[in-house]
Image (cartoon, rainbow, N blue to C red; front, side, top):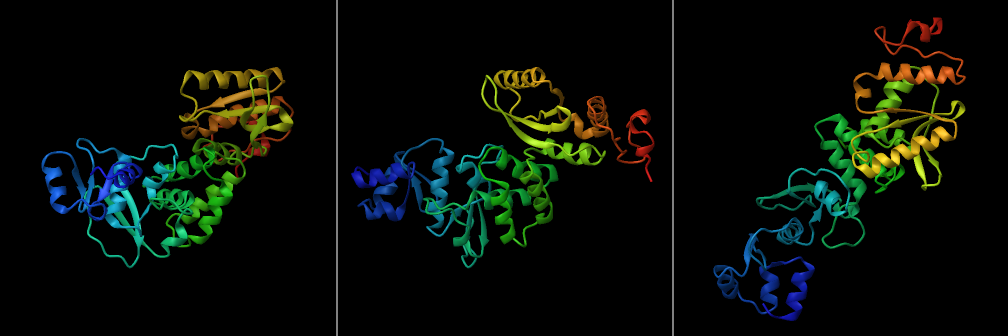
Amino acid sequence: MDDEEFAALRRRQVGAFTRQQANEHGVSDRMLAVRRRTGRIQRVFRGVYVDFTGPVPWETRLWAAWLAYGPEAALSGETALRRLGMEGNWGDDLIRLELPHNRRVRGQPGVQIRRCRNLDSRLQGWREPPIVRLEIAVLTVASRRPRTDDAVALVLDACRQRRTTPERLLAELDRLRQLPRRGLLLAVLHEAADGVESFLELAYLRKVERAHGLPAATRQVRAGGAHGTVYRDVVYQDYDLVVELDGRTGHDDVRSRWRDMTRDNAALIAGKATLRFGYRLIGDPCAAATQVATVLRARGWTASPTPCTPTCSLPLELVGSAGDVV
C-alpha cells in the first residue's frame, strides 16, 4: 500500500479504491485480507475498500459507490445536487446513481440505482465521477417530491441561488416530455422567467396580485445605494410601493435582518412605501391584498381590487361597485 502512484489514486478518490485497482498496483487479495483483519482498511461495498477505519464520510462513500458500479454510472438526483454545491436539505445520505438502461446490477445497501436511456446525453461535460447536469437533477428531484410546494420551491431555489436560470431549465424540460408534473414545472418556470424567485413570491403573484385584480408589478428590481446593490422583491413602479416577501431562506440571521432594514429605510428615504409579508400570507391572501390595495389607492391607483371568491374578505368600501362578483 506504499506505492506512490497508488497512494495518489486513493487521495484523488478520497480514500476509496477497488480490489482491481489494488491488484494492478501490486496488492494481492491475500494482502487486502490481512490489512482488513488488522484494521488498516475496511470494505464499504463488494470489491470496494477505503484505506482507513471508522466512519466513512459522505464524499468517500460517493466515490466508493461509483467505483462499485463501474465507469458507466453517474451521480444523479439529490446526490448530484449536493455534489454540485446547491444549498438545500437533501434528507438521507443515500448515494443515488443512474446507469444505462441495459445494465442489470445487484443492489447494495446505501445506494439507490435508476436505469435510464441515453444516459450520455444527460451528463455534465467530463467529470469524475460522472454527474448529470444540474438542470436534469433539479427537474427530476422536483418531479418526485410528494408535496407540490416542495417541488415548486426546489426549482425556484435553483434559480434564486444562481445555480441555473429559468431559460436553461425550460430548455431541459422541453426534452423531458414524459417527466411527471411537467405541466406544473413548466408553469412555475415561466413565472420564474418573469422574476419570481421563491414559493412565497409565487403565492403572492397568484393569490394576492392576480386573484384580486391588482396592477401588475415588476419583480426583483435592482437598486443601488450607499450599502451596495439590493433587489426589491415586488415593485409597483407607478405608485412608489415596494412589497418585500420574507420567507425562511435568507432572512434568519442578524446580518440579513440588518440588510432588510437598510433596504426598507432606503426605500422610505426615496419616497417609496414598503409593505412586508411572511408565510402567513399563504393562509390569508385576502388580508394582504387589502393592505396592498389600500396603499395603492392612497398613492394614486384609480381602479378597484376584485374579490377572489364570493367569500373574499376585501372590505366593501375598498371594492366598490367595480368589485361585484358575477
